[in-house]
Length: 341
Ligand code: ADE
Ligand code: ZN
Image 1 (cartoon, rainbow, N blue to C red):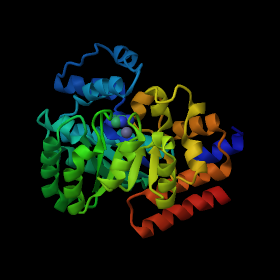
Image 2 (cartoon, rainbow, N blue to C red):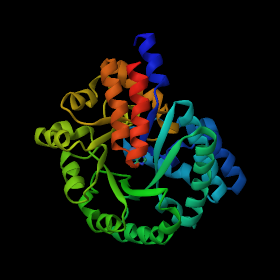
Image 3 (tube, rainbow, N blue to C red):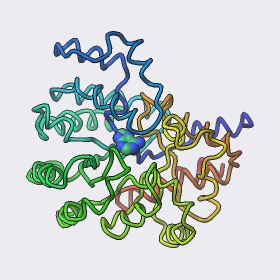
Image 4 (cartoon, rainbow, N blue to C red):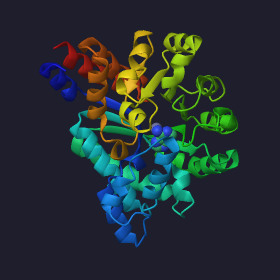
């Protein structure tokens, strides 16, 4: 990529909408927290843990990811993890971010919903003060677990909405996609929307385009996380373009999890050219070799994206963010000023 464009891309204000906070845990912090709590990890050293980052598919990653998240026990741990991500995102010029968290993986280890929220909230308040970064939380249900478990998890969160309504703005659906269709979670998403929460879902990462239709029609989501397999269904691509439902695409994740064997084969540009509101995000940056700027650079180079296309992708994220219209106008203006200067 031309140096001036690369510089402009790096310095651009950005919004990140698809990042699992547990996926930002760097090995050093995992070992530090393991030592603090006397937790024994299935990997004896940092190098051994890093050596396990040779993933072949989504499940091979999730096994390591859930093991890493096992060191999170008290509010300070959640605060330290969130503070580290927000500082790193700020360095990539992220000005707004919406973080996924996976409460079920912590609840089953005896960590309460209140503990998680207290820790993340503290870091988010500090980061707004210190870096001017705005942030929200999206509670994800683990789709390999039962509908009953998801309903129970939502029930744990609802009483805390009085305190955290400004922060906890939506629900999502993640974990092992194949064999766990969105239809399994229709009732829990209805209950979440009834409580005033927004809805998103992972779909069309490893699973078929039909799961994207299900997420839209049954879960009534406003964004699709990944969605890169939408290209297999022309009517779906047209529908996504017509409705401007954004796709939160994660290029380095797709490469690491072998969704594409080469970034040059990535479907982001096909979708962009069809008028779909694609965005670029890091998913689990500690595991996939790069934070959001690295994702932008990798996909821009692989697909030879031009300045107008990069401006469009960056702007799409602000258009799709769960923020009020005043904040959106201010942030979009900053983006347009940056790209049109
Ligand atoms: N949890 C963390 N990262 C994920 C991904 N890429 N897909 C599904 N679940 C996840
Ligand atoms: Zn994800």
